[in-house]
Amino acid sequence: MDWQGMSWLGTGDYDVAREVLQRGVAAVFLIAFLSAADQFPALLGEHGLLPVPRFLGSAYARRQPTVFRWHYSDRMLRLIAWGGAVVAASLVAGLPQHVQPWLTTVLFLLLWGAYLSIVNVGQTFYGFGWESLLCEAGFTVAWLGSSTTATPVTTLFLIRWLVFRLEFGAGMIKLRGGQEWRDLTALYYHHETQPMPGPLSRQAHLLPKWLHRGEVLGNHFAQLVCPFFLFAPQPIASIAAAVMIVTQLWLIVTGNFAWLNWITVVLLFSGISDEVVHAVIPGWAWPVSASAGGGMPLWYAVPVLAASVLLVYLSWWPARNLVAKRQLMNASFNRWHLVNAYGAFGTVTKRRDEIVIEGTDAADGASGWREYEFHGKPGDPSRVPRWFAPYHLRLDWLMWFLALGAEGGGWFDMLLVRLLQADRPTLRLLRVDPFDGLPPRLVRARVFRYRFATRAEHRQTGLVWIREERGLLVPPVGGRDR
Image (cartoon, rainbow, N blue to C red):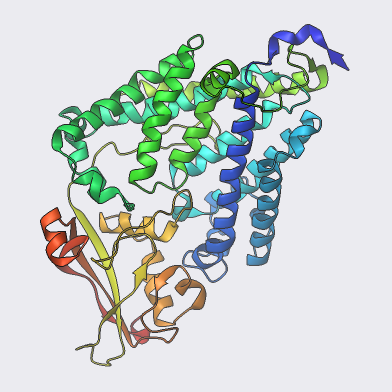
């Protein structure tokens, strides 16, 4: 039954935004599921570094909403991951969006439920804020409908509220965090010490310090001022969204933060109206909704409103957190990862330490040490960092945290065991196995201090990084020592 009396709930002014939101969030889901299919078994599978079957024996795990509570196998994980990838790919292509709105809602809720199941057993390898961000974005975008109906304004508002918490929360974390954000020196260090630098990070680091101070000022403006204008009339909301998109693009080209910046750009389109898009790109031809006047079936309007009320109700805890003296960063207030608290880099690391894992064939460990190379984290000082985002290299990220002094939680010891065993799934997580699939006799882990080479040092040596040894993290160990 169509009920045009609920025309207030829908709008025909954000058709482009809806397409970008649905296809963009689906694209991130596609990458996340492909990443899970590729990395999860080696990291968390039956014979992984932190096996899920063992984790599921804990009381905490038994309280989490996940399909793996009843059974886990690597085969089941791959089926869910590849199934999620197929569903996400169909939404990226825009196929379900031409059917009744219930279909896009059901498919996005399936993506949310499947990925939630993975996140809730992912332990430290899935303990990143953008995991919760993707879950929340998937659930919220599920209620945008399809091209057969108008775009629900309550859903657009809630996506903007999500962006507000994401950006303003990050800004407040910085103001309450390290002095470097208040004295505008944070970017003196960030490009060099960020978790996973990109190919342009060194060039960004070598920019003049006055420009780095300008970066910090621009960041504060984008995160502490612009989010409020997302709720202003057009075109002010679109301008605010555009400013924040520019700052996110700068982060994309100067670093590797998995899909955090990419999905933020997508979500910011909730503030950009079709009128602004057509003014900026004349002749833009994107399919418009069949109900541009605001019509929406009653059977769809009711669940949209119910979902909106639920998300508004759950907003109390993250809203209170934004103004709390002890603001939580990247926290979920419920097991469903809905309406979360976000934030990043409350303090900036001023020195970069890296853990280098080596192996040798020599029984006495006196010589022949060769390095294992990771895909993303710095290793070989002559190697230019690569771009990997929005793909998420989970092991590389945890190696960065480990170098900062984080507890290995058992996964690092198991990583060394797997290297001693020349475990093929584990070796696939690395860029270079110096032993070509054969087990070494011994492995060890050393700590090095890394810094970007100056322009003069780079011209003289060709090196990207200058490093010096800081000590031994794990002395030489063999298979019998573990």
